[in-house]
Length: 213
Image 1 (cartoon, rainbow, N blue to C red):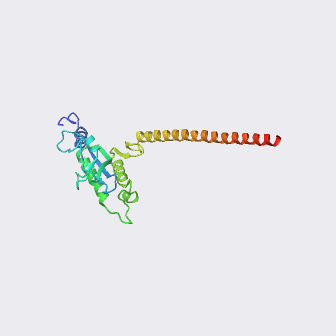
Image 2: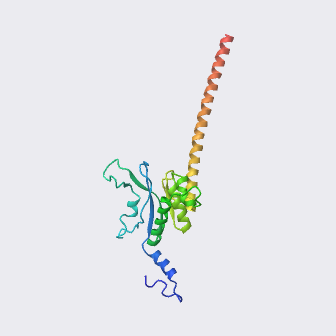
Image 3: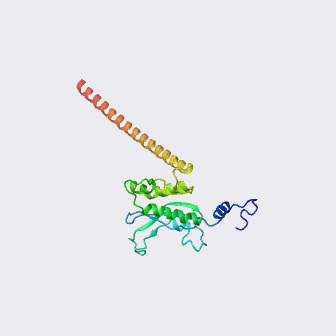
């Protein structure tokens, strides 16, 4: 790290620090939710996917798996947490700051006259409130954000081009499925109507034949 910016004519400590952060260990700050809604959602501690890091208790794959509540980790009916959103990657310093800001917004209690929009998001949207707080904070600080969407079955940011492309693909597939089902229903309805008309036509012919006979 000593060679960072060493060839610059004028040293810039800020630039050097930012480059070192990018080259150093990358951290994420997750949001954990209980699918059964037995426990309140939590902002997880900063973590690194670097398996060899002494400061990282879990890997990225392990983080995306289910976490059991520390109240009763061995119980099969114990409430469990799953990652439902995360911000990062970022430097350890950025992760600590982000974690503190997110936690403070989660634990703060905005008054009726509060002008802090972010702090009140969790109250106006109980299902995705904490995700919205994290999303807003990440956007303000230029940090990548992703959250889990059940209808897509994956993590993405719907405000990015990639996220919008996935949403568009999902909607196209749903529309295609809807049109196919509608076409099948229309065909079935048409067949039923033709069957009824054919039966009426046969009944009419039989009636006319009886009258003529």
